[in-house]
Length: 116
Image (cartoon, rainbow, N blue to C red; front, side, top):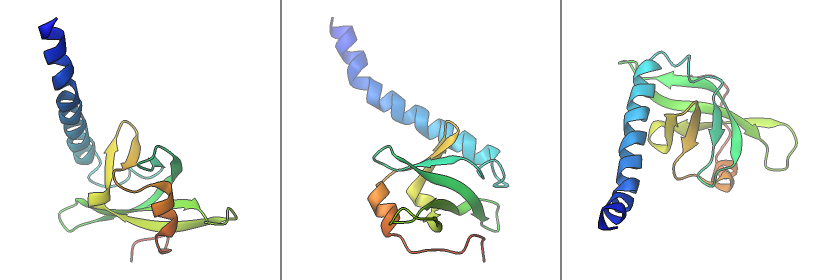
């Protein structure tokens, strides 16, 4: 019984480590940004809020930000918003916004569809 409880206590740490490893592998495999385009985007509260349409890369080919297409606040049409690299995690064939709820994303300003 004590061994089971010890395993349960370590489970969140193991899951976090696995997520970090998968994120690092995914980011390395997608250094040109093309494999990120088209991925679904989910908010921190678990709602699917859009899809990646553009990726901005730094001079050393690291992802700096993504642009996603999402519904407009009134529910009519679509709009594009930019999400900085520190706000998302890539893994499991999708993009997760670690600390942004669907409501937070709706409050973001519009961005051009393509990188400047």
